[in-house]
Amino acid sequence: MEKIIIFDTTLRDGEQSPGASLNNKEKLEIAKQLETLGVDVIEAGFPASSPGDFESVKAIAKTIKKAIVCGLARAVKSDIDAAYRAVRPAKNPRIHVFLATSKIHMKYKLKKAKSEILKTAVWAVKYAKRKVKDVEFSPEDASRTDKRFLYEVVEAVIDAGATTVNIPDTVGYATPYEFGELIKGIKMNVPNMHKAVISIHCHNDLGLGVSNSLAAILNGARQAECTINGLGERAGNASLEEIVMAIATRGDILNFKTKIKTKEIYKTSRLVSKLTGIPVQPNKAIVGANAFAHEAGIHQDGLLKERTTYEIMKPQHVGFEETKLVLGKHSGRHALKARLKKMGYTLTDKEVGKAFVRFKKLADKKKQIFDEDLAAIVEDEIGTTPEVYKLVSFYILSGNKVTPSATVTLKHEGRNLIASSTGDGPVDACYKAVEKIAFIKPKLLSYNLSAVTAGEDALGEVSIRIKIKKHEVNGRGASTDVVEASLKAYLNALNKFKVLNAK
Ligand code: KIV
Ligand code: ZN
Image (cartoon, rainbow, N blue to C red):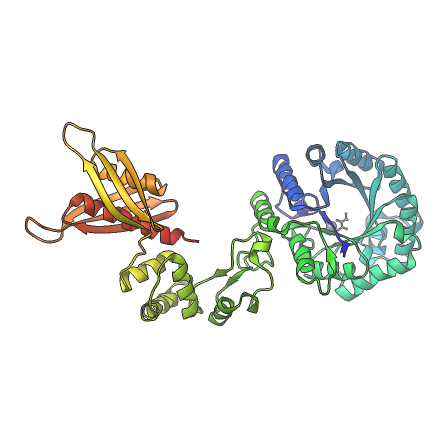
């Protein structure tokens, strides 16, 4: 299997996304994560564009050890000098020189003739080559460049020492078949092409960035330039995660490998989104919140029977925890049953049926049903909370001349667990003992004791509300002994929390 070199340009082209500016500390954090992800090349920035960019490329060059660190430069001396000074500390430095070759760019932007462009490109590559071994050249707007001229430029820059020639679809104009043919044409018509790697750099203006990249790979490109979350100028660049996962998933057609540790993809995507402030659309392939979420009842039923009916990748392979069955009005009984089981409720079919009727009614009013809603439905309809922690016994010592203390024994996963604690009173001591056993530290929001029945042997009922992590849960317990009622209420709340927190 041939390897595809993954060239990440999140910190350069990605940072050109409107509104995506990053400070140097953030860029370094992203660069470290890109290295963990396993990218081969990190294009860290455009050193001549600003002193800040220069400093951040330099800091990245000093820190990154495994990946090649690349700096972008126009085909001018001052840019190449700046790029060199910035990438020089890197273990593997690269200078990436670009110069436009399309008629439109040469005429209106550069106001230069073909011969001058060719001469400048060769000079720039030779100049960069005097500084580093690894030089990449990009004929900007290559997909709109006259083919004969493109072949001529590519051949000349390889002769000048370029080790990678990148073919950018700068304005995202190409279509897959056409772009694949362009790469094939370069391979066939540039006599020294075997001396350099063909790279591609596809923008997404027509939403074809990834398709064009894959077509190019199938026709001989061996380096893919891409960005996390598809960030980049205008509509962005081809997304790294989509290219990598297409290769990983469709080995039957794309018989290639990359060095990417796919399990790091989601984490990297989250980091880039957090630091750039650019959210990932929920339906974004591979990393969107809904990429592995299923709502339709037919799909959920299929998935529960066999995951591959509706999933072509395992969410865990890209770093998601698991497939998400979103419970909403399209969901079916199977999905509800599976979710309740996961939460710890083992219900009979009749009980699931009852819960399902309530669930459907609620789903008509509410877009998404959360675990808290399900817990409330089951509590109300069936009146059960799984006893994750069950009271076995308690012993208290209390009085006006002693520090109240308690020893509590709970049954958990078949074992008796015991803990002792002191407290402000017997109830407080019991609660603290429970906290030691369950390794939790909830906040007691309210505590209420009332007599349920009249008379001396009245049943005391305790209702409490506690907050653990993000969940606020109620608990209820009744007994003729107020300490026991308090303990039962606490365990009832704790068990509800365990259900909500169940993965
Ligand atoms: O899109 C483009 O052409 C570029 C070049 C600098 C490679 O970003
Ligand atoms: Zn670009």
